[in-house]
Length: 433
Image 1 (cartoon, helix red, strand yellow):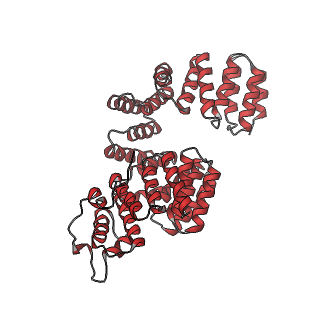
Image 2 (tube, one colour):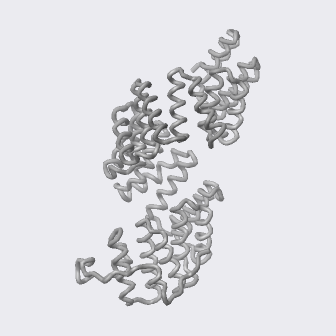
Image 3 (cartoon, one colour):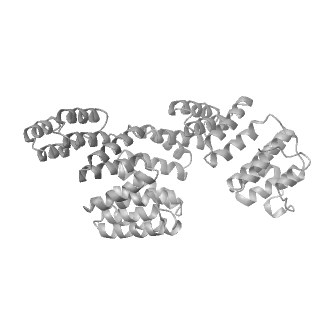
């Protein structure tokens, strides 16, 4: 359990206060308190400025709270959550009912992906004083904790926006919640609004690029992700997405270069190796891609992301037996997601393992009903079992729910292999574009 630090020793217990240094102020007109409250520096400099302001002791109760909040924020942004927490909890010694303290504690939990705990703090903050910080934090944390629907979360973000219309985080987060809800067209407006306020906002530029990419507007996406990468050349997330978008745009050499940068920056993570292999495969070098992923598997033992992509490339290279054996390791002994089940179903159908295909389809549809390819795989399974009428019904329902009609051609080919030529011709004619 966390406890409040006694007021008499709070600052001493939480921090080792430095001797004041006038070099932190570049003008005699400036004061530590003003610079701290204006967040006029970054990192260690802001921490020292705020600590100096607190040492000066020339403040009233309200300003004391604001200085402690600024100090807590400075520590949090500097990835020192324990010291940030101490600063926020010291606020409660000055003002026991403080929305600032609750918001600060909420953001610590939010930054550590402990969303249910963050919701508790933001809820207390709103009860004390509904600020844009608390409302936005509550909406976003509630969404990530699966306590609020996207629409409910967006209502809180809209309330936060009404209090502080130019708050970049609130605007951006609106975009990300829409993106995470697969409402990519709707996400463009808030991301664009954030960029209009700050043309160098890397997070908003990345959000814009990802949304456009999901809408298959790859040329536009490339422009935004290139801008983000130029502004933040060692931002791994940006490099990962530039590699993806470049590959989708047919620029495999660019994708390969970014994959190499990701490997250099994060050699013990799977992202770079998978990106490298996918670019190699996109260039027609499946053997190189398989070698890259085999090497990654040896370096990152048991990594299921690498295993998935190795199985996928092996399937493309007509090595379905080895691919199926690999993905089954994840299915039986790992933590499979919908993509693992999708690949397992495809491979099982290719190899005629109908019962395992049925299990993968059922498990995949249960956790990802939005993934309409499972309807296609179900229809393939039914064709192989001779249930042709039911196969067509399942396929029709999947198309109505969003499955691309181009899959009809593949299902018709399977019908022909099963001796149903007339049925295949009639079925394909129904979906002739």
